[in-house]
Amino acid sequence: MSVPVLETRTMDLLRFATAGSVDDGKSTLIGRLLYDTKSLFTDQLEAVEAVSAARGDEYTNLALLTDGLRAEREQGITIDVAYRYFATPRRKFIIADTPGHIQYTRNMVTGASTADLALILVDARKGLVEQSRRHAFLCSLLRVPHLVLCVNKMDLVDWSQQVYERIADEFTSFAAKLEAPDLTVIPISALHGDNIVTRSEHSPWYEGPSLLHHLEHVHIASDRNLVDVRFPVQYVIRPQSTTITDYRGYAGQVASGVLKPGDEIMVLPSGFTSRITSIDTADGPVTEAYPPMSVTIRLQDEIDISRGDLICRPHNAPTTTQDIDAMICWMDETRPLTVGGKYTVKHTTRTARAIIRSLQYRLDVNTLHRDETATQLGLNEIGRIRLRTTIPLLADPYRRNRTTGGLILIDETTNRTAAAAMITETT
Image 1 (spheres, rainbow, N blue to C red):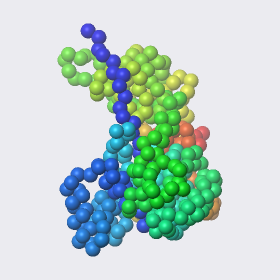
Image 2: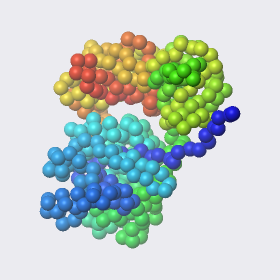
Image 3: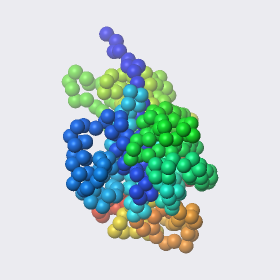
């Protein structure tokens, strides 16, 4: 009896992060989205109403839905990344509420590193500030393909079209200096829900979509790299069942490209080639695998493959290298990055040891000035370094592939994540 092959695809998923300066309304905006899309449980809303009343707020403070830490609620600020989930009939969403304070840059980098879209909020009364530009640059550095500038608190400037256009023009000219392929500007009031789920009557001069409509319809399928096949092997599956004796599969998550049964593939670093015989999922066999599906691949030939190896096309392979140039965000608050420092590198499913060969410059993300005299990087600072690893990594530039182009450095003594890096060049 033949096994049925699944053809159905899951509902589209959009990951987006909020960014912007302190008190621009990021947490309030997320709370409003959750509230207006009816994604809250009754007890959640009652708890927020009770805390709001205890604090003396005259309204239900929806920001409390994401500010879950006690310090966040007491100070009225966001410290750590908070993830929230909701869905509409058209799309699923994962939100990363990231901090606005400069000392939490590493948290913002963490939240935006996997985002398809970034919401950058600006207070209409203040206009663009240093943190607005800083976060826009970080989103560009992390290759977030879609940016949405939300001009918030428009109710406090009487929905002035002139204020909105001035901020939009200023940000658009700044974004032109960055690699921001898609930019949308929307006037909103997160506190009152204007232009969040539905168009607001307070802005008849605005002809664009509401925020939720844009989030539901922004095209993200073409953002994924479907050309370069990259499949890091995470685990080799050999069932112990007595009824299945000849099964050998290679499990992992598709980083990029499309895999189909019958495709010729190459395994790195060995260089052996074979063909795919089947692709299995938890729900059964499929006719193709694409990012970010988690699948098990079976091959025609018996090849020695283990965790850390990578499956690709024979004539389209990543660079196998031990020398890597990367932009890096330093995250260790106890020990700065110094030349000669030794760390553990985690790259896809491969782990290696590495040494910092050189610090080429430290970047001032506010002025984009490169300080080539810098000798170390402190907490939340960004710079460009050169690494030398003990074993070759199978890497692509980050601009081409965010999975095989990203890595983290781990302190060998404390086992803490010391830095996140985006590969710029492989030699």
